[in-house]
Length: 115
Image (cartoon, rainbow, N blue to C red):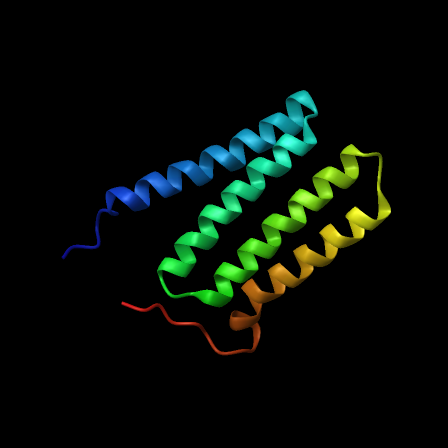
């Protein structure tokens, strides 16, 4: 099987993720709808996490899920007027999620895909 062209499902997931991130960014930047932007980011990160889990990459899936929750918490915290608890939770979730994503390349072992 050739790896030159992605499978149709992969193309659809990539398109969904791009639509979520671009749409969320546009909602936040142009219209100030931070909660909807956070939901769009959460949906995009959830799609990426699902794809990682399908490929057998549990650590990456967990990191992406936590990052998506972190963006959602930050968006809601800012929308509510700098709600300190939600902002702190968002930053914490983003830090843990990013750590799970980056750790294998910094000093841990690399996660392999299940083919």
